[in-house]
Image 1: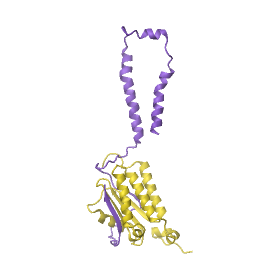
Image 2 (image 1 turned 90 degrees about the vertical axis):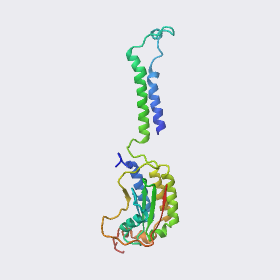
Image 3 (image 1 turned 180 degrees about the vertical axis):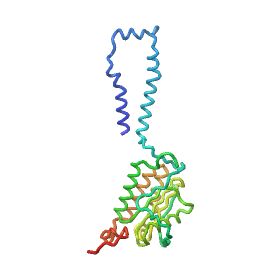
Image 4 (image 1 turned 120 degrees about the vertical axis):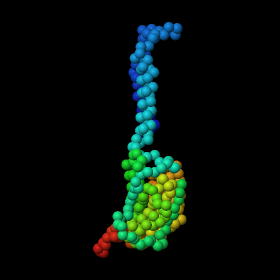
Length: 113
Length: 142
């Protein structure tokens, strides 16, 4: 799934380049030559060196967020603290304060990691 | 409390499904608790077991997982112990802790539950005919 998302994003990024025409002789003159390049306007500079890197950063951030699930769930790693209320699944004890008898002959096992 | 949730909705659904599947496959009752443990987890487990099971003849398995203490405890009633021997519970703990040690809490819980259910096997016929007995109800005999 993430691979497909990455591929789709890459194709989207390629789209403007593919759609743009190859350029005419006049466009070539617009950028000047190797010895005398035409100056860039402020908008072009900002676009090239600020907007595009920021855009890429944003795309990567979105991909990372989507891959993580983005659900805000705690990422447990061994050794990290666990400060959540206890959660029960399946059967749960009755909320009675009356003491119950001990369970002789109870079995089980324990372990740590 | 830490910010956010311990588990996502999808993770909770997976755990719920694993516990439910184990219960319906075995006829035993499973209680899973994820949270901090007392200094004496075994005692705590037996106390919780006594508050869940009506008596020693009811098949109940309590699984306590404490990610903070890095400890897991399985406690079973005598009736459940006949179906899940202690060494089999130990094997389930081994596979759970091997997942936990790489940070996969949900995966470890799911495999542990599946393993416990596999060991216990399907319920005996007498238990199938009276499912209400699990809840302590008396069904009319036909």
